[in-house]
Length: 480
Image (cartoon, helix red, strand yellow):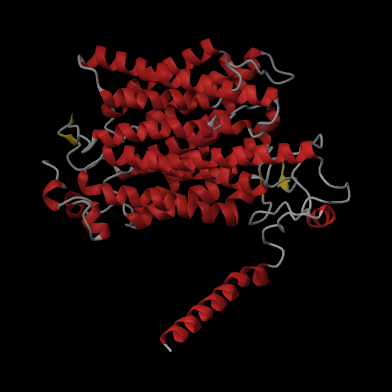
């Protein structure tokens, strides 16, 4: 009897499982995975999701689609992995009493970013022909499936899956948003941060992104930004500057006109975070090649990785040398930010500069980030992780350096014209991000919901905003 009862329970579970697993097919209809291949060629042809009026794809087209799609997917995962790097970097360079708050913000940047980009941002950034004078348009919500016909370029060549494209693009949107997390750390209300994150990923970043990557007016002028020094990093950097200005400095950061550093609680976290970001950048920059099949595209993809690596390395070395000469001691945090500065600077032009050009771009970026940190300190602007010097200042440098050192001068422009277009596009996008985010932060401050109270800030946002400690309370308090 016991065995029979157990058998009946097992059978019931199997039947229930089969019913549950069948629900997606019933509910979603066509939006399900294609039928798997069979041993019958005729049946395979009938079930081929890419069979269309032009006939089935050739073997080479299947191969191109597969390689492009899978490599783009891997690159999207690498860019998503950068969220872990940002979280570790920001946590490490901030107080122990705020680690949960910073981690939570990074999680929500990605999660809210995916949802807002799915419903709104992706359609705003890539409206297709449905746009108004290259300024604004909306191509619809959700991601279309490639069940009837694959994506092709204007020449009819097979590209990649729409799903892989969305995953790659939404990872960029999340990156732009999470840059701000470090700049406003330690004093911003969590709910207000969620409002900011939704606005940036759903509206601000996609609209300016469309101006370049969605065939908007800047793209039509010849503005170049291969992987986002300006479109992604400058947007995040200038949004962070707006937030830091409106919030004001952390308590104890500037006392009687004197700068009082608030050291990060875990430099090991920060260092590991930068290594993760560096690795993730191999999805960011080489992945922006978008197509990888064939000798020419494969060579271009790896050359992009080479220039990216050169700029990061020289950026770290240049920042170390400058900081060492100014402060008499080698500062690891400056070297870490120098590596990121080089990566940001090369992102716009990694496809079109020489190796010597990459050395110059990374070296200048490494110097700029140190000078930028010093300038913010002199101006009493509190940016705990150096988000603006790294992403804002060096993002602008990347946009300008493309015109100065890039070899892909658009048709109809000479070198000075190219530099002028790059300067204009960079100013337009950076100004758009700064002004819109400044207005948003000012509205939140006017409503009295932007900054936590002095008591909550001193106690730490982990306990006051989230009701928990990231570390034992005895280890999570500042000595200020």
